[in-house]
Image 1 (tube, rainbow over the protein chains, first blue to last red):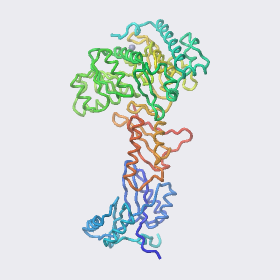
Image 2 (cartoon, protein in one colour):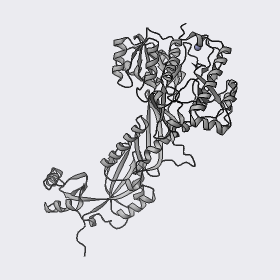
Image 3 (cartoon, chains in turn yellow, cyan):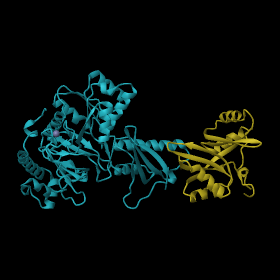
Image 4 (tube, rainbow over the protein chains, first blue to last red):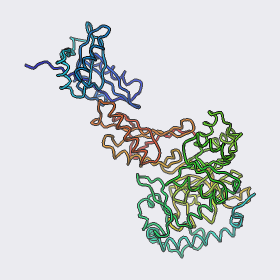
Length: 149
Length: 432
Ligand SMILES: [Zn+2]
């Protein structure tokens, strides 16, 4: 029996900064009946990295690769935070106390709480520190698809 | 009208024929004796120095190409030994490796003589103050104008490129009358002046010695009317000497001194001589060279010669505007760039693939070069800082190898257009 799995497979997609690239990703997900739970874009000079959390990462990766996207999995952590003023502040305070080095983060609301997706330098190490400080990590099962489209 | 060397410049066509033939024979003797490479070439073609009996016999000689200059060691190519070389310059090669050009003392003197005649024919003299806003260094633009301007007794301001505010300051403080620059930099200087509230038309600056990149009569009109600067078209290349010829005050083509060089126009496909007045590839023979031989050297430029006597009285032929290239060489801010150089440089970066695309635009007055290159899927990382660092690394390598800055854009593999055979990788969108 496997224990909890907190390593969330985020899709990282290399993309030109061109209108229509996000739409192309979104369309492919729609056609595959895959739900996008969160996404963010990091901009470089003329290019960008689209980061997406979906409910069926393996299927999503296969489809995007078929469509010619340069795409890979990146392990991220999903930390639960309180959906109220100060929720993010409390969480970041805790993360800094725990000594977790964050490469990047983005959030979304998932009633009744909110979620902060974080990429840390060392995922295993980060996971331990966060749990030891009493924060709640979401398990991969949380992101699995609801029935049907 | 002033003449620097009236004996030669005003010589009759018949006397020039005689002088040119004498110089050509001497050159071929010299090359055959002292340049093992050129001797080999002549032997391969079955031609001996004695076969050169008339000027038309020039066409019996083998061509030289940029590749010849690059592939051979100076000992095999040069006509003079190390002891007699007093200077080296470089010109862009088709790979990362530049072509090294050597000069004897007399080569430097002949170079200055050629350009001194030209500057005088354009109306310049000892009263002028010449600001040289070309690059000093391995490329010849800076020192070429520097020596010739000094030779005619003008004062030189060796400003080199860049620092436009200071360029304008010096024009004002010193009463500069002439600026040597690329035409696009001249326009840029004019635009900066306008932004600073300086009216160049009211300044002392009256003449621009402009060359090093293709330009047009449209640009000349703009430089003349908007900035009050007479635009004199200049020509030269580091393999030859450097900048060596300009238009005279009539501004109707560049006088090519017949005792310095022979400019032939050929059909680039057959190598045959073009009919008079026909456009074709420029082939140059430098008659007085002592160190670095240039004999029937294929320049790759497309132009046409006018043999008619000029209104200024000189019977030396005139080269009209260069209208293009037979190869894919680009000129970016006055620097020659071959797509193959870009290719060589990109190969040194394992993170990127073989496909690339060069996009050239003119942003404002200046050239802007963008190199798009495909990031290999295995080199893709989710870490944008690492991607940015890779991009900067490639940017700086390109700058070192091309001597001119280019922007670099990483694109996903498969996103650049693929071509059959020789890839057409350049998109030149400049309107000049
Ligand atoms: Zn003339």
